Image 1: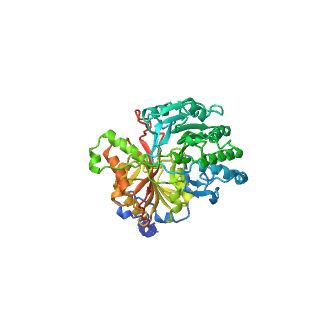
Image 2: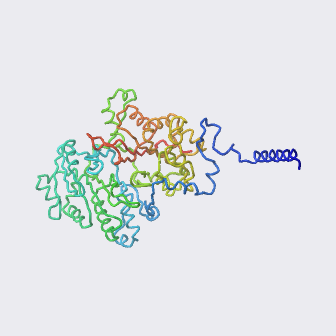
Image 3: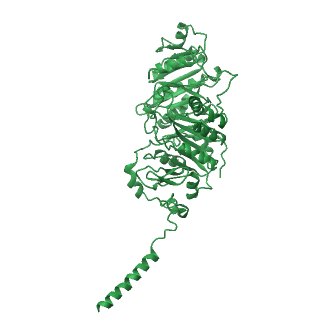
Length: 534
């Protein structure tokens, strides 16, 4: 072949090859959701077909090394183990069976009864005031008008689990109580100490106690026998029983004594899963808070915190704002009885109002903003409630991918406009929902731990009407609450129908040196009382 003919043939073949390539290469038109609406080079969402296709774990396994490892214990919240007949209502939301039935139950059911009973709320107290320190050396007290300790109140301390000096000092300085310390025993009973301290005819406003073994309940039985328990308005009790070593027989004894306490009229109003006792399934210790409704001031009700007008808030001073801010976020306004910890018990997990989830009829959709390397909540809420979960964070070391069969991750954060941020982008909730085709889908849970971005992004969600169809809203607030805009946001949420059902002070955060019961990081949990499902 002549050289000229060879060159001509080569050019013809090359041209045909290029034409074939362009005609058959994958189209980019539908690779990304709503790509033409985005002005930035990286789109919000991945290919919509991925969301319904068979899960390919390739990317998930590739990014696994970046994630904080978490292996939850089997049926951590006992939803599969506990028979439905033990789910009650009213002030007995988790029923304890009689002795014969209790003795016949399996080991798993018995342990579940204990761990669920002490984390189920039986009656309502709005304002739980923290006295002492948050991290460890303190207690909550019900400070509603019906239960609040009044001047010259009586406090007996017998807790051995931690020093109570900070708590004692608060009860003296803030509530003007008489505080008496004693390590009670079968010989040194509450009744005998009331006689020694000349308080025999008085109501005991606060009584603290810790129990580390079943034999410690003997003191409770003595209080029941001599009727001194009838004079205790608030019982603050720490229970220390490691699930790894506690035997079924011991759980049975604990449950029997908890039933005795119930029969004496004391009701659980709050509980605390103590962080230092966390395991992957059950806690090794809990703080349980009881009140005696028969001793409440029947002329008074629950605490209510009202907001002034926006104009009045803008004129308030820093300390005045902070006092109202903390008082509001630590006052529950909605009664949820079954509070389930989903995800890690320590930082990373979140508390879900199980009552509302059981009433929720729409397909479960969860938006989770701010995960970094911890997807424990996202994985577990998907598995527990069969939810589709969309997790977002622009700061992660890994990129956008499908993390699990019903969990998708985007390197994207929440903001007020679409813009570049850290390793990814931020966008308004309205745009994210649009690009994911969720405009017509209600959101079961929206949670955001976004390191201060909540102060601008949440008002934008309200102003653009993006929260009316969100059933539960979980926010971690960052700051000292001394800014007018922070208080105005709480007012906006309240006006939009959001009511607090739970709050959790993050013990890993910075605390106020002068007020150690205040943290700059507070998880606050809202129910939407004006929820409009789609």
